[in-house]
Image (cartoon, rainbow, N blue to C red; front, side, top):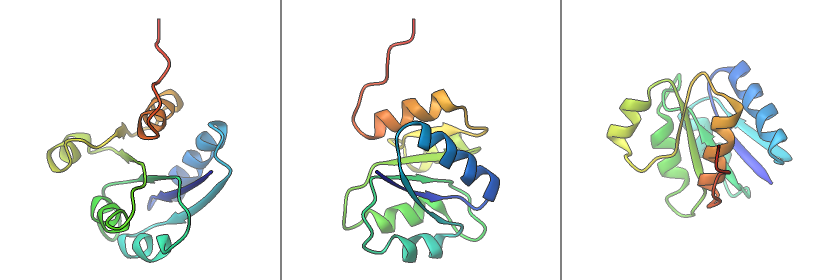
Length: 120
């Protein structure tokens, strides 16, 4: 399964890749700006997008909106600005930075339409 990671901070993108590999994803592509994300998504087969909201330069929400305009792709937003994103996209699936593996796992399962395991 392929993940498109939209993140302008290299170390965060690699950390996300490591966590997502642990969840069974096998291939990855990366973009660091809004324009690079839109161009990079092209016609490649993408099973999941993770996207930061604030990109230098650009806006992750705008990039995702453009990428998903013609096709439906599950999205998890990774951001330190969760409240701002909730105002702009109330139905977004959000993981707050700094990212914890269990929060990312639950968000990915939600995005893919699976129910996360119940914590006791």
